Length: 125
Length: 125
DNA sequence: AGTAGCCAGTTACCAATGGATACTATCGGC
DNA sequence: GCCGATAGTATCCATTGGTAACTGGCTACT
Image (cartoon, rainbow over all chains, first blue to last red; front, top):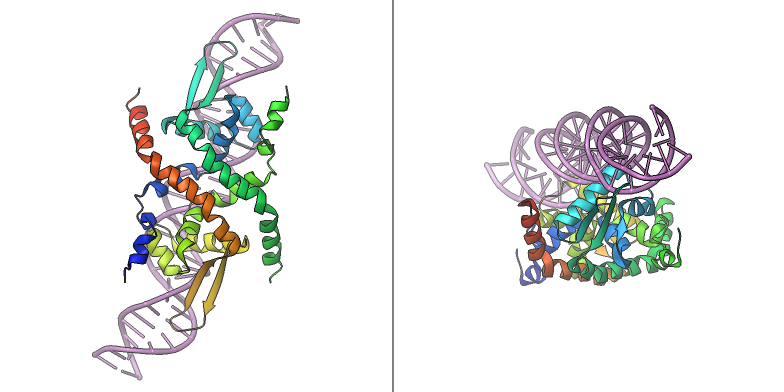
């Protein structure tokens, strides 16, 4: 039975809906973090890599290339030695900061409760 | 060189920061979508599975178990035939809806621009 | 009596994504 | 003529996600 109510949920049930497409894109392991890290200004490849700390260069490259393809960051190469590559948020990329920050703030507020819930669950409550 | 500015970025550079831990958790393939789908009320396993459409039952089970462990959803089993299992957002889970909706709205607003950027990138501009 | 079906999964196996480590190109300095 | 710095590739391994088939308890149909 398909009710009005189901429709009122938005078309999240449709795999083609913008939300789902975008979640597929920014919902991988490092994309959201990379955008958040770039919010205060451009960063170089190594700054991102060392900042994240645990990402393999291959994976960081993939992440940044996808962001570039999606029009969320620009990649500027300076033909110097040693080479310098700078990643910068585009206006569209910057506009994503606000919603991502909302998630980030939620995270900071609830991380303790989440850890607590996990401990209870694991204790077999 | 470590500047004040780097500190002002928040401790996103620290892998233990709440934001990063939470992004690791809800940043997998189906978690955010599952929470969004549950926002209008409880759903059964098959409702989620059929609604998402392309998720394997094994993976959906994993996703829901993680959400339960994190204290974001509750899992109620009714000992009927055929069995009935209902997933419901906890208050903490519900509080995540607002930030996730912010991302969702951003997605709906920018999906066209993203597709456009992709097409340009792929055309080798 | 036998069988088929419903729901909420589980099991076994395969594909795709992510991670660790080593290597490359370029050039200036030692 | 060798080292080091940067921004990556290349190669191989680990972890996650996906596919398809099966389970188990009970009901309904034949």
